[in-house]
Image (tube, rainbow, N blue to C red; front, side):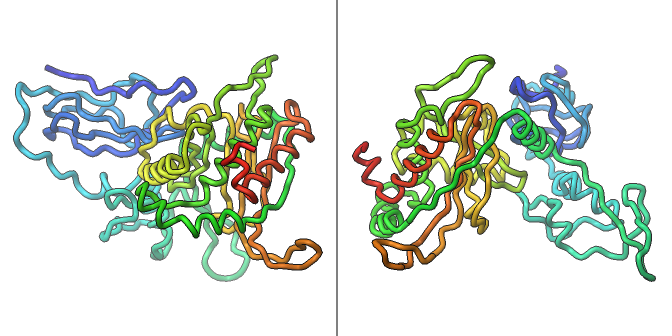
Length: 386
């Protein structure tokens, strides 16, 4: 019996997806639940498995093609019984060379990297190709030549299509800038108490919970405590209404090979520190592999972004609509500060709270950020619900 392999249902906010890579060639036998194709949306990579054992007869959508929910990707013939033979090995180049990397290789007239790449399963990513010295450039319709400023080789430019994720990110950032009245307030926090508490208990914490005690759980707990005191920071504008959730869903920005993702810690007000660390570690691991589900990226009432992991000292985070506030945290560095009229060295971190002034007044924004600062400088405040 002939079966249609279709694009799975996409979220309402996703209008299209792109065929990323086929793992099986036409005419090849497949096992039930064997991965056939990866589809990239503007948020995640979806894996489409075979619904039954059989033979993949015909591929209707190739790599790079745009597809929508329920589009037919391929046709397969279902076998009468489970297949006993192992699925064939697909040639390295179509499977292991990602589209962006393949485009660059073709433009430069280069062969695929024999040693494989840094992507999942040895896939060759765009970064792998860029980091390997290219041979003498060749003429290509997709490479533009600019006039020579000096005698010698012409200067060239490479054009690479934006990924769906990057396009969607650009759209959301522009919408955030044009659709909100964004202001940012800053404060500094002495991280001495947090670092001392973490140092004192990190070994016993990891032994008991099986997860490393990081710093993000401290920030999340301090944010939750502040949002409970100033719920307007957790609210949003919806049409002509002011909507204040009775729950706190915190989005934690995670940098991945595909770009920035913001998975959600649901009901963060109910999570212990081990739960927070465990979920963040899981999100980080699955982000690079593209295995975060769409529902894990949807919603959120407040966000945290950590530029400090890349060395940022200060920045103004951009709102993630329809959320009305976002906290930016930065690198902790030893700095001279005045404590009781004496100059001492303390580990300091600059905090930045961006907020939508249409809903949040400066008073609530400043007091909310001060509450986060106090929760980090004295963690007993949120441990004792002070």
